[in-house]
View 1 (cartoon, rainbow over the protein chains, first blue to last red):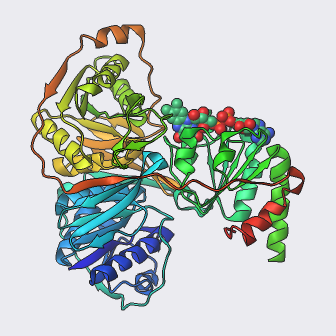
View 2 (cartoon, chains in turn brown, purple):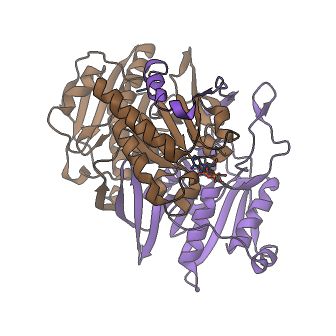
View 3 (cartoon, rainbow over the protein chains, first blue to last red):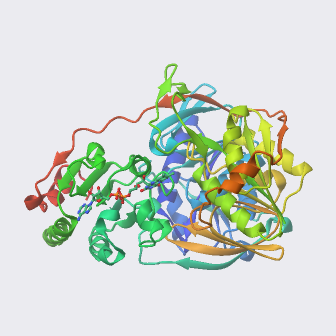
Length: 325
Length: 245
Ligand SMILES: Cc1cc2nc3c(=O)[nH]c(=O)nc-3n(C[C@H](O)[C@H](O)[C@H](O)COP(=O)(O)OP(=O)(O)OC[C@H]3O[C@@H](n4cnc5c(N)ncnc54)[C@H](O)[C@@H]3O)c2cc1C
C-alpha cells in the first residue's frame, strides 16, 4: 500500500498548489499508516526534486523523457497510472489544476478507481469508510460522497489545504515508463505564459472589478493595487463579455471558482452567479457606491463609496503600510 | 463530420440551493432546469463547424423523461437529432459509461461536452470518455478549429495558455471563448418538435461512489462598514484583524 502524489510543475518549478497537495497526501498516508511516493514528469530545475522530501514525501519518482517534455494529457495519465501500479498505491492525489482536471478522470478509469474531484478537506476515514467533501452548485453548497472502490483518485482544490513542512527521506529514483505511441495523438505547438502575472486560480489575494468601473481604461488602478498586494486580477462576467478583460479573468458560476484568502470586489453588484464563484474566499471586501448592493450581505468588510475615490486611497495606504513594514 | 455534444440538465443559475430529507435531497421545488451554460457553448461551436452541409450534430443526454424540454431546446438551437439514455444520471462515471457505450456503436469524429456542469462542477465526463474510448481528451478548451483530420485547440493553463494540435477523433470540454451561445429562432423552435429524439435504455454500470449528503456553507458574520473618508484604515484591519495581508 502507498499514497501516490503527482507533483505538477510549471516552467520547471513545483507550484504552490503542488505543495498543498503533497501536504494533503502526507496527512492521508499518516492516517492510513502508509508511505508517500511522488511522481514528477518532465524537466524540473535542479534542486526542485529535493523539495517534496521537505513536505513528507518518502520517495520521489522522476520521469525524464524527451517525449514527455510538454504536458500530453493521455500520456501523462498512463505514466501516473503505471507508477501507481508499480508502487501498489491505493490512493492517487493530484491538484485540481487545469492539468489535474484532465488527468484525474483518465487515471481513475485506468485504475478502476472512484474519483473525488475538487475536494476541500481531508477525507474522513473510519474502517473501510472513506468520505470526501467537495463544493457543489458552484460554491452554493458542499456535497459529501463516500468512495466505495478499493482504489481512489482525489484531486484537491487549490487554497483549500495548508502547506505543512515535514521532513522525510525523499529518495529520488528514476522511473522509466512504458510509452504507448497511441498516447501521443496530441501535440503541444506553443505555450504562452504571461510571466509577470499571478495565476488566478492559485492566487492568495484577488482584486476583482465589475461593470461599476465603466471601461477597460479604468483598470490601471486595480492592476496597481493588485501588484502592490501580490494579487491576481479578476472580473465579473459582463466585463469579460464586453471584452474589457480576458475571459480567463471571469469568475463566477460560469467562470473560474476562486477561494483566495482575500477577495476584493470593486464595482461588482454581487449577483448570485458571481457570488457562487467567490463565496469560499476567506475574507471578502466589497467596494460599491450603492449601499443596497447585494454583495455587502456576504462581505466581511465594506466601503460604500465611489471606486474612483476609494481605490486610490487604498493604493496610498498599501504603499504606506509596505514602507513601514 | 459527425459531432456528438453531451448535454446536461441543470438548475437555473439564479436558483437558491436548498435541500430536503435531512440534507440528502436537492430541493427541486420551484426550480427551473436549463441547458447547462457550457454545453450551450459546445453546441454553438458544433453547429458552426457543421454549417453549410459540412456535417451533423447529435446531442446526447443521460436523463429521465423530464429532461426532454432541455433536449428540445438543443434541437431548437440547431442540433440535427438527439439521443436520451433513459436513466437518472447518478454520477460522472455512470454518465461517461453510458455515453461511451453509445459512441462505440455510432462512431463520431468529435465529442464535445461543457467544461463542467454547473451543479456538481466536476469536469470529469470528457476525460473519462477519452479514456474509455482511448482517444485524446482536453478537459477545458478556449478555442477550437478543425483542419482536415486535426483539431487545433487552445487550452487554459494557470497564468497562460497552450496551443495543441490533436488527431481526430477526440473529446473536449468547451469553455467561454469557444463560441457565443446561440438563441433559438422561430424556425428552430418549430422544427425542434419533429426532429428525431431516440430513447436508448442504459447499460449496466457498477458504482464506485455513493452520495452521503449536502451541507450549506456557514453564513458570514455581519459586514464591517468602513466610512469612505477612512478607507485607508481597511489596510490596517486586513493586516491586524483579518490577517490576510
Ligand atoms: C446563466 C448566467 C450565468 C452567469 N454567470 C456569471 C458568472 O459566472 N460571473 C458573473 O460575474 N456573472 C455571471 N452572470 C451575470 C450576473 O447575473 C450579473 O449580471 C453580473 O455578475 C453583474 O456584473 P457586475 O456586478 O459587474 O455589474 P452590475 O450588476 O451592473 O453591477 C455594477 C455595480 O457597480 C456599482 N458601481 C457603479 N459605479 C460605481 C462606482 N463608481 N464605484 C463603485 N461602485 C460602482 C453599482 O452600484 C453596481 O452594484 C451570469 C448570468 C447568467 C444569466
